Amino acid sequence: MRLGINLGYWGAGMDADNLAVAREADRLGYAVCWAAEAYGSDAATVLSWVAAQTERIDVGSAIFQIPARTPAMTAMTAATLDSLSGGRFRLGLGVSGPQVSEGWYGVRFDKPLARTREYVEIIRKAMSRERLTHEGENWTLPLPGGPGKPLKLTVHPVREHIPLYIAAIGPKNLEQTGEIADGALLVFFSPEHAEATTLGALRAGREKAGKSMDDFDLVPTVPMAVGEDIDALADTFRPYTALYVGGMGSAKQNFYNKLAQRMGYEKEAAEIQEKYLAGDKEGAAAAIPR
Image (cartoon, rainbow, N blue to C red; front, side, top):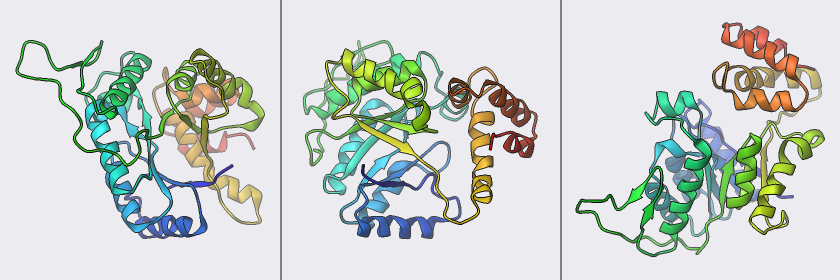
């Protein structure tokens, strides 16, 4: 097992502390420093800054939002970050959710699994240093009937293969991630429920690709707090958990809520979501099982 840190979103009021944490993690030999994005800070800029302030620790996107960039732009960004960091970049992707994809990026949240697969295919092609051509449901490169021509990525990453991760929660996404990615970015990972909620689907995807789990990287993000009062420490994370289980998505489509249900918390998940969407955030947090 290797340890990493996740700085989350930049601009939350702890930026100086986050940079100090990244530097200390680098000094202590942590494996990777991740940064997130949604509709605030962008992860690429944050990771460039962290890479410039560190020496050994990898820097990774957890995640780059798929609707935010064309796949070719993501390939450019990944290659540039790998070059700037001296071969320390890890590319983490996520399909986002309907509220952010359609509300912020103006991209329809249609067929997210097919879009992710095609997105990864184009990135792999662009990274191969060959002229980029692609015909798919979401992207055609070059566009037909115009002046566009196949182009080749002109900035070369330090490594021929940049590790590619996908944030996955649902069974179908997990299976596809096991098939097409080098690792999975996981949230609310539960060792007690791992086989039923996560590992089984990932393993099925690896088998579909003719590969094993031996060289597949599992990256669960685990909130942590240090202290002696366990209940008080747990309470600090209840608003965070309530946000995801109750408010991250709509009443019909909330991947985190469905994950809680698959863990056996159907009743609790429904109550948390009902309270959160009704504006009772404190009640939603209090409904999280102890």
